[in-house]
Image (cartoon, rainbow, N blue to C red; front, side, top):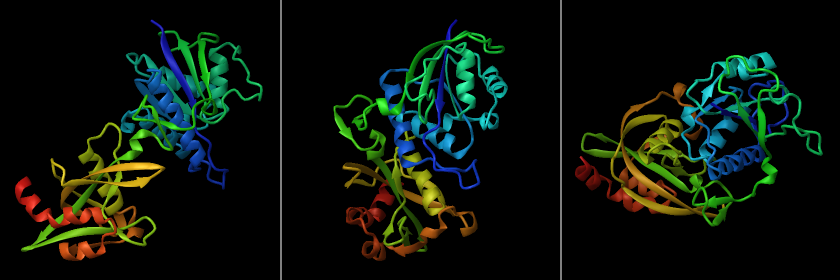
Length: 322
């Protein structure tokens, strides 16, 4: 039985400042990975097993590509052996891949990936005019033998070689084949938020956090992550942005829209009963600041005025929602 191997080199990264492992991906690199993810979704060639180098530029590239394919990024498998891997190491990684996976994606670095590709293709890979076989965010699709325990020289066939610059700059909305074209992948425009609350005796309090630039007060909000429910996605944002855990309401408290990335974002808002507040030492975004305030105080502090009717109705919503 033939299988497929998708070899993907990470997106363009910033130049090394001494710590190669934590070198981040650039915005251009992110867009390249996302365009490739949308293309894979459109062509119906999404992988059923994804394995990535844990280096920041590779793993973030994999996350961006995976989400743009409409897949849950938590399914990515990280393997340290993929970082700065030799041909032998890469063959070892492939040998460990599950037999049931018919289409596997390998995300890593050059020169190892190019060496692997040439080995599998018997040195017969077509070299583009610029002399680069696998530039940043390029995807090679190989038809492979069924048994990967001992892959021989010249055992595969090249099905396609795709570069991000060959793909449309804009992203279809809705994904994957919508007619409208937007600046970011479709999932960016669906977001979820929570209004965190607690009871202090008879007093209902709301937690507000500082915005990313710390110039106004907001509630935890973020992109609805592909593969997660809106509630779980909002709970993740609350943990990351506010350092809190709790129970998110099953039904929406409300919704609103706002402009960003050249289009309109739709935000679903839920109530969240806070049961744990992490200490500052364990809160990743402590630079934001956070505060508990009354509902009346929140109405005067929160920047997004569309939240005000939801804050005013929060007490009644809690009673109804149970």
